[in-house]
Length: 304
Image 1 (cartoon, rainbow, N blue to C red):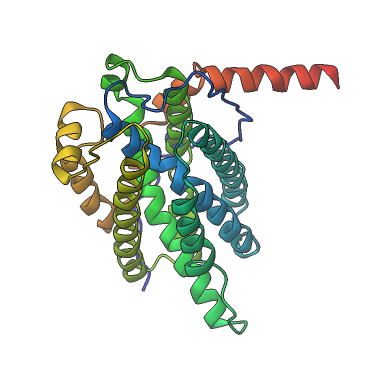
Image 2: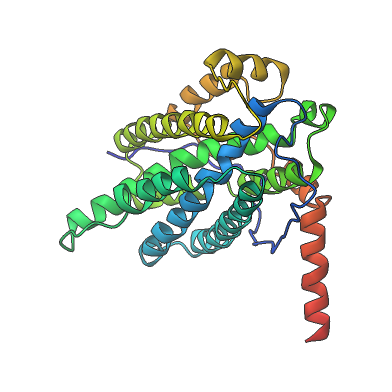
C-alpha cells in the first residue's frame, strides 16, 4: 500500500556530477587518528564495505533505469550512479596502502563481496512479478542504507574533534568529500524507491534488514582490523569504546544514531528535510581533492 510522502524541499536539490578525485596515501600512517587505533579502524571499515556495496548500488540502479518514467529523477539517478562508482574506486584504492602497512583486508573483503554479489545479487527468477519483486526489495534496501550514509556524511563534515586530534588530512578529505556527496544525493535513493513502489511495509521491513546487516558487518570489520593490526598486542573492542568515542566527538554518537531510526520510519519522512546541501557544497568548494579534479577537468577541456 502506498501513501502520501512529505513534499521534498526543492532548495535542497542540486544537479549531481561525479568528481574524478584522486588521493595519495604514502604519507598516511596506519593509525591515522594518532594514538587511537579503535577510532581509526572503526572508520576504516568504510574502506572494506563501500567498494563492494557501491558497486552493487550501481548494478541495481542500472537495472532500475528502464523503469523510471520521470526524466528529472532519471537524471538524478544517472548522477548518483556516477558519484557512487567514484566512491567505490576511491575507497578501493586505500586497500593496497593497508597491505603495505602489514594489514591485509582480503579475508574480510571476500566476505563482503559474497554478501553483495551472492546474497544480494541477481537471482534466476522468471520474468514478471518475481523479478520485479526482487528488484524493488533491493531498491528499498539501498534507500535505507543511503539514510545512514547521509547521516555519516553529515557527521564527518562537522567532526571537528578529528581535526583537533591531528587526524591525517588526506584521509579526512576522502571522508569529507565522500560525505559531502552523500549529503548532495541523499534524496535520490528514497525518491527512486517512492517512484517505483513506496510501500511503507517494504520500507520498514528493508530498513530492519539493512540496519541489522550494517551493524553485523561493521562490528565484524572492527574486530577484524584490530585482530590483524600488526602493531597491537592486546586488541580489544567493546560497545563502551564506541559509546565513549561518540561522546567525545570522534565517532557518531549512539544517541544520534538511535534518534535517526524513527525519522526514517516516520510516514512523513523525506531525506531533503534532513542535513544541509549548502554545507556539503561549501566543503566540496574547498576540498583539496575536489579542487584538483576540477582543475584537471578544466585543463582537459582547454586542451581539447
